Length: 74
Ligand SMILES: [Zn+2]
Image (cartoon, rainbow, N blue to C red; front, side):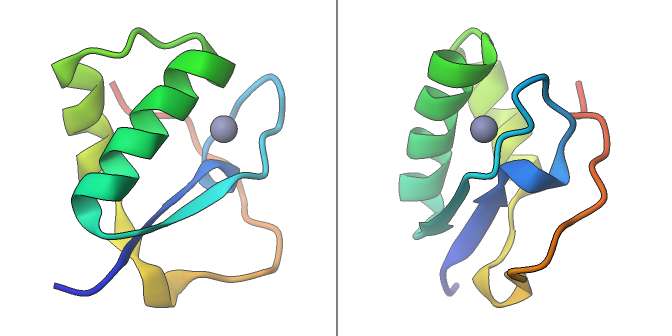
């Protein structure tokens, strides 16, 4: 599997976060979970990691353009 992406622009957040994390799946899940806890007030739990894992996209889906935000699942 190639690199994957967690893109905060894809999800609604009060801070309208623009962060995009790209890397190997485990790296991205770990960094995104820390980020979600640090910036977005989530609890860094195994459940959160699984939710993040479920939202990962291929790194090739990256776009520099704005994205329409949707609610974070779960
Ligand atoms: Zn964010």
